[in-house]
Image (cartoon, rainbow, N blue to C red; front, side, top):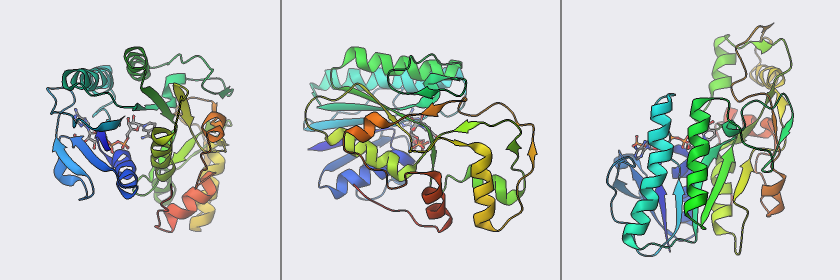
Length: 281
Ligand SMILES: NC(=O)c1ccc[n+]([C@@H]2O[C@H](COP(=O)([O-])OP(=O)(O)OC[C@H]3O[C@@H](n4cnc5c(N)ncnc54)[C@H](OP(=O)(O)O)[C@@H]3O)[C@@H](O)[C@H]2O)c1
């Protein structure tokens, strides 16, 4: 069985390594394939252009591309056009994968006023970029019965240390008003991709991938300062919540038998701070 990862960056590579470790052939498409590890067969491909031939025995396709900038046009090209092109290439080459998993984002929910969001919550993106991601989801699910959407919350992990950097540089500010934040460790996100792609039988069209503990952003910043032995970040006015004020509920993902290696930000950030990355699944 071959797994094709279209847009094989940080997350796609981690998922690809796990598929390879499970004995699958893994092909990774990106514009700079030389950056991929040897376990993944790198193929130069631009998802917005004409695409290479898809191996006949491809049973899983993971679309994990990202936009180069936060503009509507860049998001349309990366997500909507990229996804449509992959589906066109599958039709062209007669491929019939069992799963086509689109890595999406909980940004499709916009702001929920601090409420809980799950797969049943209507996705009404507040931003033009969020609308593009939602459009790509809808396009995939409308065009392919093999389509599956995994909506991830904020990814953190090795090399993805935005909050840690804010705390160490002394620029972190704890929001004066409580502000929900949601996250998933990069390794759990990769493990969830492999888990969902490998499930037997029918699956739901959409899953949320977010750890077990939505948490006030200020609490995370305080925790990081304590772990690093640094002064408490001050409270103050901050710009609007990066991910929208909401609490992501990933009960459906867990009901399929998925276990988080990093159930909360505490285990996850302790692992990042220790410079380790746990591999499972
Ligand atoms: N960051 C977050 O907190 C977050 C949260 C929720 C969801 N997500 C989603 O997670 C997904 C993957 O994120 P990531 O961190 O793995 O991103 P990433 O490391 O930037 O990987 C994306 C890869 O896509 C490739 N790519 C971009 N444009 C391409 C194109 N036109 N043709 C072919 N390949 C292209 C890039 O490689 P080349 O430059 O070599 O082409 C890049 O390595 C994205 O869909 C993102 O929306 C992220």
